[in-house]
Image (cartoon, rainbow, N blue to C red):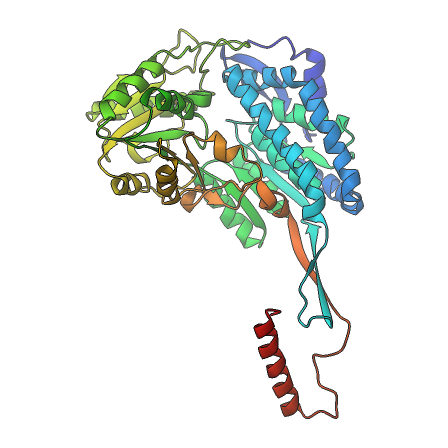
Length: 516
């Protein structure tokens, strides 16, 4: 099932954006049907080194380009992305199997990121005066120097968002980028790269390699000047260790077992509707998706009835229109994990309130939205990340108990609190150990607020995307201190003991005046 927009001419053009010279190829899957989608070049470690050599040459001139001139490329890119949005949506759907409404949500994030940094980058990258050691005598200037060549390894679940949303600020900051998207979901990132080149990005500045994760991805990690990775905690730990051996910085957005707390004063039907989106967007294949819902025991049955009713009524179907509420899982591996989690819970005594079955009649990887209760610690979906359309409901009796249960995990990526009393809900939210916490929303309020940082605590990652850090992490901070009047050593005719007394008195005076 291949969209009409993926013509042979477009596919051939996108193939040309891959750095791969061995002649090896592989075939990606059309997720809705399970058939062949596209044959793409496969890179090897030699290709990775070629990509970095080309990127390094291009980066030197790019770094010397004034920021305002760099940004003109991204202004044009923003317009091109909007004009080509239907093709982008087609490619995202074809290679992931997600519903079109989820594909549109994915398109929006790179647009928001690009627009945000177009406004903020000039100030963030401008040299900033800092207070010098001695007022009037010594000045300090903070500058930001590009890292060099940034490696970005992006995943299969949101291939366009998590590639473009990270590489755009890296490029704006004056770096080159070597991108390695997942093999299955390379078409939409390749189209994004092509649109950047159409917008005027200098030749060679953005390289794309495709191949085996441990081999090609390992070569990217071993060669880059900074690494950005989105994926599993297991792989992220290996990348951090590997980067650390070279003292190369990294930013890692990893897994989550994200909780939602439903307080006793909510509007039940409205909260159930919000929870549906929080749990089943992109068939639950979302790092910040909700997999655990804690509901006050006074409203547990009423909420469960409303939530299960809505989950069971979701429209599952393939197609490149907006008819589906939820799409497919992306691979046989994802389907296997989801099935194993649900089957394990069912066999050990959990109750399946709705769903719990694959739907091969719709497509090879479809699985019903599933709601569980009576899930206990020995069951797979209790603590392990399912990464699919499966959520478990649990009762609680007090705010303190809800916080304790929600925080009972090594993960700390995203969380949510629902309550009509927003002040109370916000107090509960502040006690949750997660990098982003949403009040009366599942994930979009925090993630979509691009001016604020987003990332994980605990084993959910290192570093942040979005906000100032989302750009500045791709730079090295440099301080230039200038001594205008020699004051750090006493004149030869001043005894050193007297000099220290004068300096101590000066420090005391500056403290009293609030200067230092």
